[in-house]
Image 1: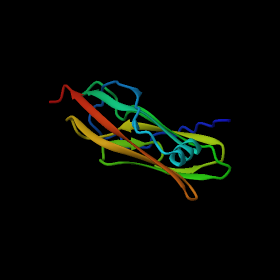
Image 2: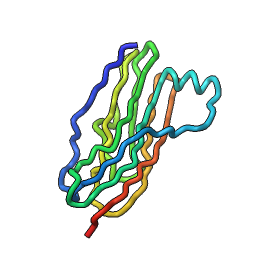
Image 3: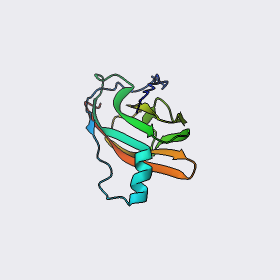
Image 4: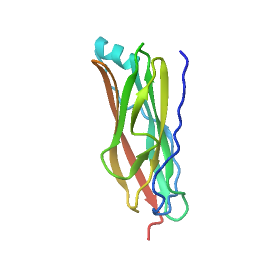
Length: 149
């Protein structure tokens, strides 16, 4: 299957706290064993969310701070739509909604873009829909802060 990665420029406000820190990995957010129907839908409409845990050092790390990616795949023969959201206001995305052509993928950059210097947790939700088929996955964002005044 041919994969097309569309990386969008982050269009997030830059009037933020200094955003330092690093941290990336893989998130296996979904240890449950899905039914065969759910497995078929997840295979056709795939969602892969990297580890979204990060450390930010006040005054050192750039803002916005890249913290991970979400890759959405449409292995069906028709166009699919997607939405991506965050339960809080500290995380931004290179794209929050759009379409994925049949047989293609889209990669969305995830960045910390907040005005806080305190540890926080929020939830990112990604949904891919194609007619009656839908796949939704969630992942936890965990931000740890160092050097706060």
